[in-house]
Structure formats: C-alpha cells, structure tokens
Amino acid sequence: MAEPSGTRPARRVLGVLLAAVLVGFTAQQLLTPILAPLSRELRLTEVQLGVVVTVAAVVFTLGSLVWGRVVDRWGSRRVLLTGLGIAVVGMAGFGLSARLALDSGWGTPATLTALLATRSVLFGTGIGAVPVAALAYVSAATEGEKERTRAVSLVGAAQAISLILGPGIGGALAVADLLAPVYLAPVLLVAILVAVLVLVPGLDRTAPTDDTAGRVGPLDPRVRPFLLVGFLLFLSLGVMQVVLGFLVQDRLELDAGATAASVGTAMVITGLVLVAMQAAVVPRLGWSPARLIRTGAPIAAAGFAVLALAGQLWLITVGLCVVAVGLGMAMPGYSAGATLRVQRSEQGAVAGLLNATTGATFIVGPLLGTALYPLGAAVPIWVSAGCCAVGAVVAVSGRALSTPGRASSPLEGEIAG
Image (cartoon, rainbow, N blue to C red):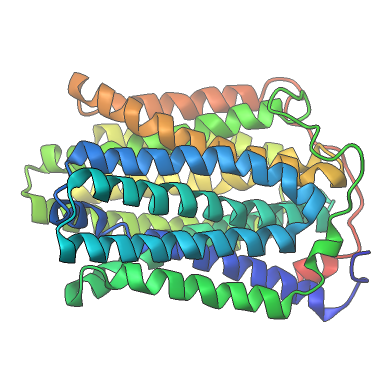
C-alpha cells in the first residue's frame, strides 16, 4: 500500500524523484558542449556524430515505451534504480572508450562502435527510465487536475533546469580537460542512485499491479488527442533548435565564436523563462490541462512568428522567451491531461507514451529543420509556428482535451506542500 496521508516520506519521495530527473538529465547535458570538439579529436565526421546522437534518441524513445510497461509491474523505485544503473554503466563506458580511443589511436570503426554501444544504446536506455518512473509516481500519487498539473509541472521544471546547468558546468569543466564532463557524469549518476536506494525504500509499493496494466496504447482514444498535441508542440521545438544557430549566424552575419556566444546567451535566458513558467507560474495558476494548452499553444505560435521575422539579437531573444512562456504553459497541460484520462494502474504505460512522444520529435525535428533551412532561413521557424497553431486548433475542438473531475488523492497534500 501507499504511505498514508500526511507523512513526510511522501514529500521526501517527490524531492528525490525530482532530484533524479535533474541529476540524470544534467549528466546527459554535461556532454553537450564537448560532443562536437570531442568527435573531431576522435576523427569522427559530423555525419558520424549525428548517427551517435540519432541512435541515442531512437533508443531513448523505444526504451521509454518498454519502461512504461515495466513500471506498472515493477514499480517506480525498481525501474528508477535499474535505469540509473544502466545509465552509469553506459556513461562510464563512454568515458573509458573515449579515453582509450584518444590514447591508443583507435580506428574510426572501433571508436564509432564503442560510442554507439555506450553513449547511444546503454545510456539512452537507462536515462529513458528516469522521467518515466518520476511521471508514473506523481501521476499515481495525485488525481485532481490542479495537483496533478502542479506535480507534473515540477518534473518538467527539473528537466528544464538541467538544460541550463548541464551545458554551463560541462563547458566550464572542458576548459581544464575536454573529458572532465564525461568523468563527472557517472559520478553524479552514482550519487543519485545511492540517494534513491537509501531515501525511498517504499517507492515501488505505490504502483499496484493488475490485469489492466500496460494496455493503454498510442491510439487509445483517451490519450490520443493529448499525444497528438504534445507531438506538435515538441516538434515545433525540435525543428527550431537545430537551425537556431544557423539562423543567428546568417541573420546577424557573425563568425562561429560570436554565434556560439549569442545563441548560448539567448538560450540561457530562454531556459530561465521556461523554468519559471513550469516551477512557479503554472502551479500557481491552477488551470485545467486543456486551458493551459489552449492558452499556451497560441502564445508559442506568436513567439515563433516573432523569431521568424527578427533581425536583431534582442528581438530573437524576445521571440524565444515568448515561445518559452507558451510552451511552458502547454507542456505541463499535455502531460497532466493524458495521465488524468487513465486509471492508476495504467500510469506507467502513459508515462512511457508521453516520454516516447517527446523523444520521437527530437528524431524527426532535426531532420525536418535541416531539410527545410535551405529553402529559407525562416521556413523551419514558420513550420514550428504552424505546429503550435495546429495544436491550438486541436485543443479547442470540442471536448477532445477534457479531463474528468476527480477528488484529490491522500498524497496530494504532501505534493502540494
């Protein structure tokens, strides 16, 4: 049985889960500033690096579906520990492979195979379990729209913070040693694995198993509208992110160094806005998932329109911040809404679907964005705006995104507190 209402462990469990999401994705993002220069040191081409990243995204997406099924049977704690353990092995293996390849002069086939096996397959599989376990737990522990949305929003905020912390810390460490971020990542993962092991011994008792577990799928009419809207929203982000550097460099006529600095500054500011929306604004609004999406998607579309027309860095940054405001509202609505449509025993499967939907857009988005950019610098950005506009239309269509009104569960008071 779940822990009774009003106990401190419920709040403690939520805190450790949020820390696991933050640390897990920070460990991943530590590598962002070094992947390109490291690939050149390893004599890999841009295409070969792209293969490593794409395979990791595919594994993350498919792994999320599997973890979603498993969490309804194993419970969140066991899935989280297993995923973190696999991620530790993968990231440690990546660091060891990179070190040996640099010192021993491995050939390209051996280096690429080692990076695919460690960074893409092992780490991609393991890290996919972390948000699935966290989302499944908070979804099973809350039922009311307001508290479910608040809890889900905090999970999203933890991921958003990692997008700021990871690249910042990784870039600073790389000044001393290019592989320093790679060495730190498994240490962080081991630390949070131990924290989960010690601090949340009863977490897996919150996910009951029954014969209905895992039956929900992507075409299930209860969750299909939310998955469609979520795919469009995250696709807009995936398309834009991959071409943003090109857009800034071409619009502002900057060299490579100035482009990196400009994009980095704009993305840090945007990340702070996204964190503020998900960690502070959305929890205080108390809006239903449908209202968050119906309000946020048009705002994001407007932000992309500003970005498509912007010719100065300050206006580009403004456009990105407006996008962050819109998506920062709509994304928690998408995640919370889908979880409210299903039973408690199906929360793991839905968490896996939500995570896989996000992962799929970051496979399709970069390919689509880079294919459209030669047609015009603004073309991918207008496509992103269109994705949000279509998502808004779906959101206002009848009762497609309606969620049942339910009383709060006993654990809501602790998560709300």
